[in-house]
Image 1 (cartoon, rainbow, N blue to C red):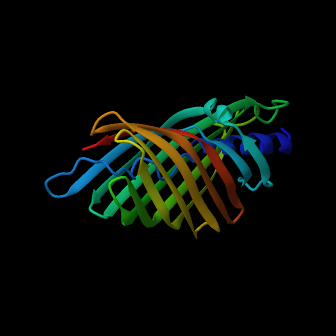
Image 2 (image 1 turned 135 degrees about the horizontal axis):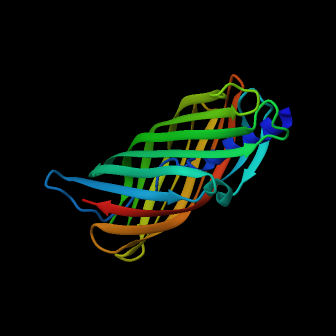
Image 3 (image 1 turned 180 degrees about the horizontal axis):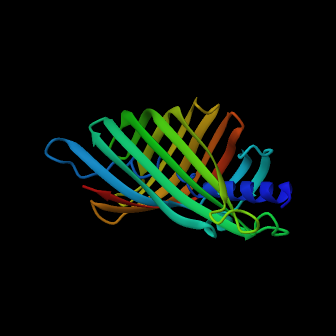
Length: 265
């Protein structure tokens, strides 16, 4: 097996993290709505599963191999998707809000080796989790619009496993893993504006750092309220992170359309 083949397969598989990205990733557009159901205690609650069709571009380095510039479309990511879960939730009381967001993605790819002497098959699997927990305060609010200032923490966890089997290897084959986990502080603004009681525009801009040198997130979406409890939205999101430590590099931008369903109670 040539080192070029291992390098190409490993880094191509790693780029599939865009689906979580990453998806995710990490803060969805569902929270900043002005019309919500209020409980007797004054709290409102929102929950939303969502889907982010993100591609990935940037530099990735794992397994001690040289960094490679990657450019993967969403279709490239989707072809190797094993499982994905994306959801967010928010609790709000007056101008105060608490929100959380979680994304889990599992992807894998498999192929044969060029000569099949040392090994016949090589497989790369990747798992990524991104979680955000934060709080906000409305610095402006009227009957149609609201602008929140927000801050919180975002955790990233990326784990990859490269496995070889067949050839002259033992029956169980051999495998090697590489992983990284880091936390970033983030802050910014999010807002919403209602054109009509049914149609609204929402968006946000966040930036931060910590374990990563830079962590940023911007998006805009348009939503439609079917009732007091159900809304749907569609928009576009871009998320960037620049992380490097001890030979592990994840310096990427993920971007693509986002779709969500909002349930308020």
